[in-house]
Length: 391
Image (cartoon, rainbow, N blue to C red):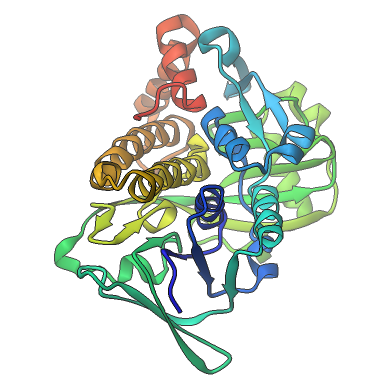
């Protein structure tokens, strides 16, 4: 079998890349080691920057997003029970849209199925070959039968533990990592959100976040140590801890119920450089991870594949390699900006092991600065909404 682009991974990054290529008639095949149900079952955040929304519009899959997505003009930050709101629309003229990553994936899967583009689910033992030569290919097994796809390019969109980055020789990669000594315990509940906008709370007991998936479904998080286990957290214990970390007014409005899903996500920052190796391109979590505090993971992945799609379209329609050659540098500029912002938000909102009385006052001063300085507040709004993003 032969195609122009093999995309490894059918998460939102791989599906979005495939859709963008489809709209320009560029043949591609997506390989995914999991089943469609497993892919759709992944619970992830969904705060979309305007740039991500525009890519979905360009892909023709934004109808349901515009119908069901929740447009937010700002967020609230809380320190020991004192809340302050940052108005993104007033500060930088930008908004974000809350629309779950699962829903984005669903829309992209439906569009791909309607286009009859090839997606192979439950593709086992995927291996990448010849991406440093003129004859790249990808091999996999399906139902015990081996297959090989010859191609022009390979897009590695298969996540942190996928085959794509692992196929690159160690000497060709530089990696940078910070593992945080805590995680987020998250609960999904079929109850209306406690607030119309996200609330990020810094409390002496630890971080908390009030988020949502829809007007009737809420997502809440509390910071926990890395040695915690989900089984130790009953719903009652979770709700009690969340209330303790919120201001009294918000805690009083909180509607609780039986959790639909409960899990602990560790936090890490990670970057692999470069993001191109001959005809292999890394995108999304295959190349970088950010802590979820800054709501950047899905948006970074979308930015990567937007750049890559434009580069491949340019190659096939104009026979130019300019975009391909610039891909890694352009993507990494945005990646490191998002890593900086996500690290900063994580640092000022969480209780770190080294956070003493001085550290707590510095965290408060950082948050006060957002209230006192329009410049600081605008810089925050630009980073959060993606208003300033490397091209």
